Amino acid sequence: MRSQNVYDDGLRLEDVAYIDAATDEEMRRTRLKSDDVLLNITGASIGRTCIVPASVLPANVNQHVCIIRPALGMSPDFLSYVLKSRFIRDQILSGENGASREGLNYDQVGNLCLPKPSLSEQKKIAAFLDVETVKSDALKAKYTRLIELLGEKRLALISHVVTGRSLHDVPTRLSGIDWMGLIPAHWEVSQVRHLSTLITKGTTPTSLGKDFVVEGIRFIKVESISHSQTILHDKCAAIDEETDALLARSRVRANDLLVAIAGAIGRVAIALKEDVPANTNQAVAIVRPIVEKVKPDWLGYAFASSGSQRYLDDAAVQSAQANLSLQNLGRLPIAVPPLVEQERLLEALRRALAQLDEGKALLQKALALVMDRRIALITAAVTGQIDVETYNKKLGPAKVAV
Image 1 (tube, rainbow, N blue to C red):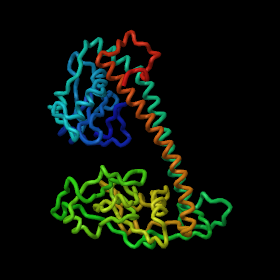
Image 2: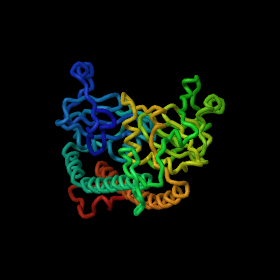
Image 3: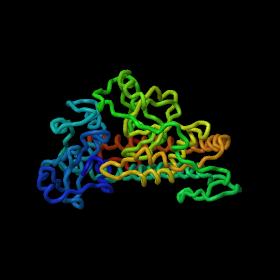
Image 4: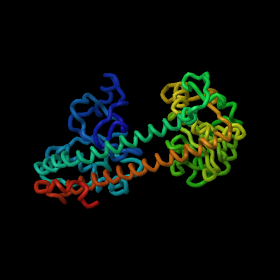
């Protein structure tokens, strides 16, 4: 079990890893037992927690997951709910008890303060929350699925536009590319290398004996590129001017495409004026479009289409981490309409995507409210603010003060 398997609503085992018997023997101190409580103690998922069911055993954890084995007199279900409460999350994230936003050690986990009613009351509270949180879990699943469907619709819309399938009553021809199929007869099929003046990648400053700095020139990594094709400034590192000069060949310009070629293969963003000056590392390719042939936005959406993403994934070398060569990146086929038609189609696409993004934002807001109310209910129950025996079920989580 790794941190990516541990969620507040239980274990997710789609990408679970496996070890052999000899490794299990070496890692016997990390063997799990039924009703152990797992807590993520590093990274972005710090604080996520769940109970180990007997059905997943035998199993172990790695160093990013802490095993908490409840003593006599402590209900595993109650403890798991307490760890989901707001006051425990605040202790973890605010630095109380020596905790850290980056990670917790075992002493810090052991020093987390929590309420401890009688065992019988713990069980009543846990049973109450088992019933009441089902409502918020159902809403969470509903909103999450709707958000996923909007993402699928967004991808389908982009794919239809950049391959010409959104056009009707126009002559078509075979593109010569299996996954592209038919395209409008007046469109061309080219490759990224023929539509670009530059395809390159960056270098990690540490390979030159340089370190990152707190403030300076923006340094873009794969995690800096969002799923919505923008650059997340708070996920960028920084380098000084001397390091930037040493990395001059990988300086980013406005309208450059930044494409992940390691790890999250194919994730793409277009650099805007507010994103530069900037540089990047070896996991991010820079593609500089020939604007007389293709608009940067057109090329960016073409990269993001389902067919292009399949091509890039198939072209990548699959090892411990997927890697895509610049040569294979340059061979990606692109359907290219005339510039005037590109702009017309882009305007319509932007309007349609804006509507989808607005709907997604509303759903995300509703989902955040559901989760806030869930945490508020859990916090109120485990701290005794709710008498679970007399609680009016008709009020529901929405009536609990946040």
